[in-house]
Length: 165
Image 1 (cartoon, rainbow, N blue to C red):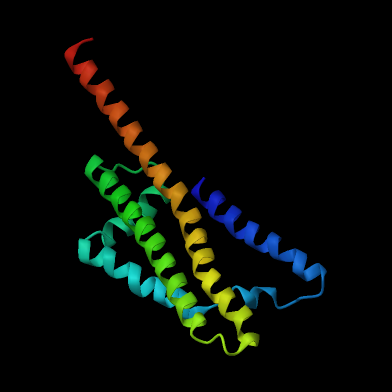
Image 2 (image 1 turned 120 degrees about the vertical axis):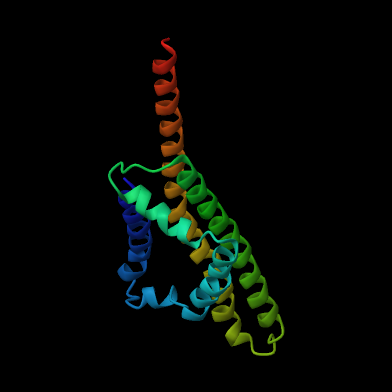
């Protein structure tokens, strides 16, 4: 199911840009590509995971969700949820920071009006990237939370069987 939501996000991006193709703009995907912004997002967010020791748990989140009901402990599930939550929060803060910094730099170069449009698009791109990443991570977090609920229900059922109720 997680792969379906991932594919839905990608399809939404592709289909929303087909309108530009109809109007004759074939390089519409180039408008969405800003590698320095992507690199800055990673440079800022990945150290958060590393410094908190949750990078392994973030990787485990994908393993847990994409695997077919392999046995995991409650601690692994909770650590994976915490890693995804930290990633979402750090992405939000980083996206806002990058947008404001880009806007601040753009305001310093208002003497060249022809460059305002491209610079504003770079400001907005960091927010778009963050939204896409969060749209990918939200179903991951929800699936992990559902696994925690299932784990707790199974644990309650086992304890009820042992007590004879």
